[in-house]
Length: 409
Image (cartoon, rainbow, N blue to C red):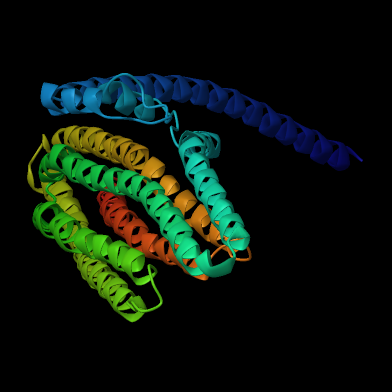
C-alpha cells in the first residue's frame, strides 16, 4: 500500500511539474511571438517606407516635362486616366485599377454614342435617297422611261456616293490619327521602358525593345500609311466605279486589291509579333538568370557587407519593377483610349452599311445595294490595320510587364 501511495505521489508530482513547465513554456513562447510580431510589423513598415521613398525618387527621374506635355495634349476619350501621367502611375501603384470591366464598357458605350449620331444621319440619308430613286423609277413611263430612269439613277447614285464619301473620309481620318497616335505613344513611352530595363540589367529585353520601336514607327506605320491606306482608297474608288453601270466590271480587281492589303498586313503583323514574342521570352529568361546570379554574387562573395548590399539591391530592384509594371499598365490604358473610338466607329459604319444594303435591296437598284455592301466589306482592311497595330504594342507591353517579376523574389 505504501509503495502504491509513493508511486502515485511521484506520478502526480511529475505530472504537475510537466504541466507547470509546459505552461511556462507556452507563456514564454507567446511573449516571444508578441515580440517577434511587433518586430516584424516594424520591419515591414520600415521596408514599406523605404520602398515608397525609392519609388518616388525613381519616378521623379523618369517622368519628365516632355512626357507630361504629351499626356496633356492627348485625347483620352472617356477612360479615367487622371490629370497627369504621374498621377495615373501613382494611382496604379496605390492599388487602383483603371481597367475594370465597368470602365472599359463605359468607354465603349461613350464611343458608340459619340459615333452613332453621325452614322445614323448618313444611313437615313442613303435610305431616303434610295426610296426616292425607287419611287421615281416606278413612276416614270412611256417613251421617256429610259432617259428618266437613267437621270433618276445617276442623281440618286451621285447623292449616295457623296454621302458615303463623307462617312468614309471620316473613318479614314480617325484611322490615320489612331496609327499616328500609337506611333507617338511608342516614341514617348518606350524610351522609359528601355531606361527601366537597363536599370534592372535587362540587356536582353533592351536588345529586343529598341529595334522593335524603330520597326513599328518606321516600317509598320509606314507600310500602313503608305501602302495599305492607298489600297483601301483604291478599293473604295473601284467599288464606286464598278457599280455605276452594268458595262463596268471591277469586282474581281477590287477583291484582289483588298486581298493584297490583307496579305501585307498579315505578313507584317505576323512576322513582327512572332519575332518579338520569341526574342522577348528568351531575353527575359536570360535577364532573370543574370539578375539572380548578380544577387547571389553580391551576397556571397563580398565579405561582411554582402548581405546588406544584397538587401539594398533588392530594394532598388523592387522599386524599378513596381514602376515598370505600373508604367506598363498606364501605357496600355492610354493605348486603349487611342484606339477604342476609331475601332468602334469603323465597326459601326461597316455593320450599318451592311444592314442598309439589305434593307434597300428590294426597293432600289441592285448596284446601289452592292455598292454599300462592298464598301462595308472593304472597311475590314482599315479595321485590321488599326487593330493589328494596337495588338503589336499590346504584345510588347505584356512582355515588358512580365519581365523580371520572378527575378526579384
